[in-house]
Length: 205
View 1 (cartoon, helix red, strand yellow):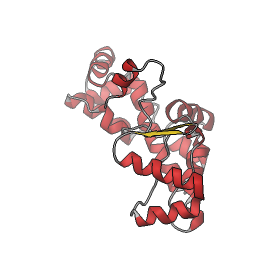
View 2 (cartoon, rainbow, N blue to C red):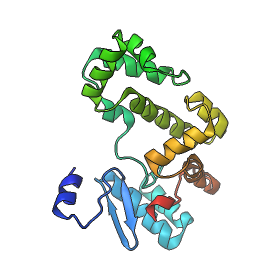
View 3 (cartoon, helix red, strand yellow):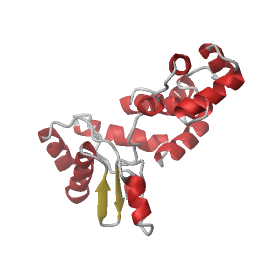
View 4 (cartoon, rainbow, N blue to C red):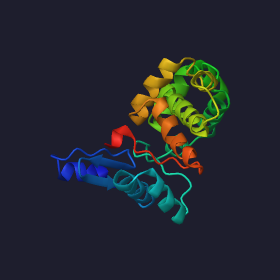
């Protein structure tokens, strides 16, 4: 909530305002309340290993520890359009991720001209239609990765990235790590028989 104010008051500090927790050598910081649990589990794993961290997670009734690299808000929470027309376009996009989802296609779903749609969309969401669609694709791809049931090629195809390299570049921009790392974090807990991802992500180190 106060990340930008913190940056203004302490210009010598690099504030990463869209990560749930960050590790800088021996200093660990987290955002909000629940992110502190994710950070604490990462600390336990760093000191004592994944098995003990898993046991602590069970006692806390935590079924999935999020990696520090994750953004603080989901795409759907961030986009929140005001008008029904932009909402229609986003709903259409979410249901048709395998489609190219051009501005013309989304504008048609919103019943607006492409020019008018692009202007209204940016006014209401603060993003271009292409960026918003990428966020929706990323969220869908991440959910498929964490399930551990799908190949990279299938995920890239079903979420509209169409090829693994394009999906990889999008993950690096958004999460600071490639899809394989997200998949590895999600799967590390299943090796312990409980399905709880407890690996510390590279970007938190």
